[in-house]
Image (cartoon, rainbow, N blue to C red; front, top):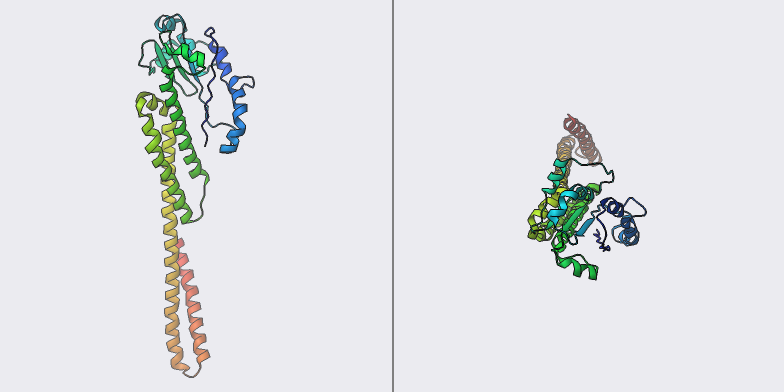
Length: 304
């Protein structure tokens, strides 16, 4: 499992969502995202064994210069949502759709918007964010964006942990009860680690974490892991029951054949008192014949 993060700062420029969508599109060979991935891919393959990423979530951190967000947003709201959606169609969005998306803003500060979508995230503040200038000089994210950025990192770890557990259950196929027990133990240990560290760490920003878990499919993935774990428990119980049924089957055959062999031995001893070989032949023959009959009868009963 590997979770990668790359931060790139850009010079001051006009608000151009369509251009920026092309920058963060990993499917475009000339995009910034594709260039970054070319550098990360070899190490990612060495660590995780995968040639491509399983999830990609770009975060756009935007700081407005010399303008208040409340004055700027009405004119640019639709393009803000287009950037959040990584929308390349350029067709107008319905006003109610834009309003619904903006209503999911989780920023608690005046002059700021923090949005999360299924394909990207957005942190937008006006010039009153005094950490932006310092961050630009250091080529680092502004301090005001760090809580959101850390939450996204932890959400990415949550998803990666659950995906690894799901893949482990879905692709592993132990053929023995011992193997199934070992797999179940590994999954339960992984879920305990997930509960104890990752989820607890995201509680400092409950609203963003809860929204992100839903947006990124973490809730559905957790339910899928839980369902797979229940299936694994059912498989384990069924395999154990099959083993016990087989054991009871052969114990019945052995004890039944042995008992009939003893009866045949008593009768043969009565008639062939001096013929040890004959008595032994009667005993073994009767036990083998009765064992075969018991196997046939019990198998037919089990099938019925």
